[in-house]
Length: 441
Image 1 (cartoon, rainbow, N blue to C red):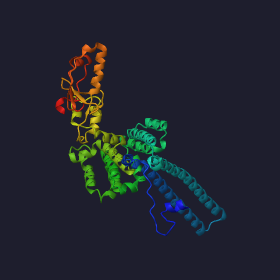
Image 2 (tube, rainbow, N blue to C red):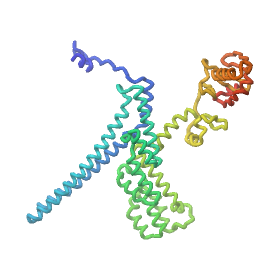
Image 3 (cartoon, helix red, strand yellow):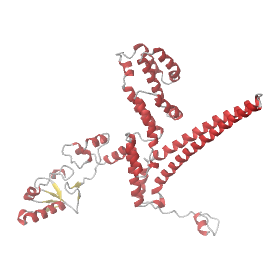
Image 4 (cartoon, rainbow, N blue to C red):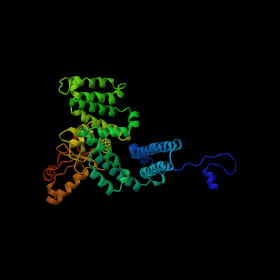
């Protein structure tokens, strides 16, 4: 009891409240900062199942309101109308059947909601692995491994490698942490747009009408405009005018300029050479619609416009990118020697290195006071450790006469004369910044 009172900050001796002692942090400060920064990119992990849950609940609510209103109206008809007993029984039986159908649909909806709740819980548990009492280096390593798998699955899904993504998710048992279902829905819309069909995209807009309106999206308008243009392309002018009156007139208050330009195509037709109207008939407009859909789709679920894999790679590349990476002498060990990585790092600034660091070209170990750099007669720099190992190798093969060594100490720079050593071992010349000529100091 006394422990409970102390925890609650209440003294037993008097009524003066005392502050409970602060609990020591169980997560190291540096690790805590790293975890906090990592979690900033995990917004979509929880938001996607949460949005699914909200959508399922909205559908259930509308269904209940619609069916209950119909049943109440049906009962009122029975009361108001003069029906025979058989007619009344038949009418009420149909209403009961309708309510039974509502119950069946609600049961199915409940299962879907429970599934989304389960996914939310699994993801919250995953994010909570590194918090408080749960933190340990082993847990952090497992969490990072799972995170890498999630990022890879996300990249595959965005790239339409659905089978590979599904197999990876199953093999690593992270099905509840990935969102294959929404990408399959998006795939259906994308394939329809690639086939120059707007029906699937319009259905998607109808399902998410309120959120798209809140985001001020013009995607539905562009779809309607494209369908109008296709009618004009087919020279079905009267159908195009009827379509415009039915579907495009509602957008006149916000998109009058685009509507006026589109209406002019009735006179110019698809064969026009006028640049302002010719562009509306360009097949590239379908690709623009696909890009617009992707942007709205990602925003709808709070997802990043770029794959998480690209974002994490760019974070690392921002520390590696230097002017030397774009020179011909760039080593193959440098990730930026690959063209695809260079393209990914193109929008990034060069890394800011205040303090220079030398790394041995052969051993890839840093050169410092424990492993001083050695400047060879050819002007290149290597670590003491690797030169010693090469000397031992030469001694073992050719004896002590194979080397002519003259070491001079001058500060941290050691000058060594190993002419035969260079001939025997054929040490490759080091590039700048990684075992550089003495002038680079």
